[in-house]
Length: 182
Image 1 (cartoon, one colour):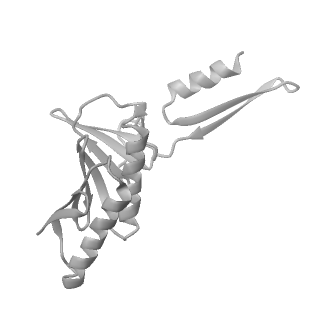
Image 2: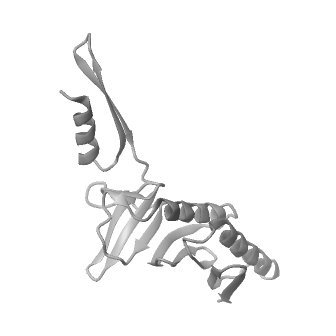
Image 3: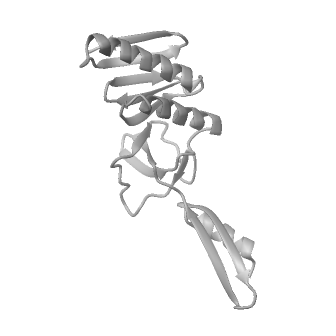
């Protein structure tokens, strides 16, 4: 058998497989197959008129097959998209934009702000649903600056009112931010 063909076949038939290494054992006439699974740390959901279809997603933005019939969303940050395009077994966006999403999420979480979901509205507008409100950002912009500005605004407002909640914080305008308190 051809070990490279077997590696390709396993990787193509099982979306949860990140890498496969097939090694022939010459003297024992066997094979050693090492499989590394993708971590289902996130979920990706396509929203359409017919409902919502969700899949597991790895940190690098690769959307892979669901576990059984339903994907467990418990504890995962869920990415929602209304593009209604087929993303199964592919990356939901470019590598740079996925990295920006993850950096933005990490920066906000570092400030002890809980994130439940990310909604992709368009190519230049997405928002995080957090425990302090909605944070709007452009995934093509510098994620650290936007997250830092939003975090500083939240800290300043919460110094005056620790229970303050935001309807939105819009970070898409450089150092200028727009926000509305609830």
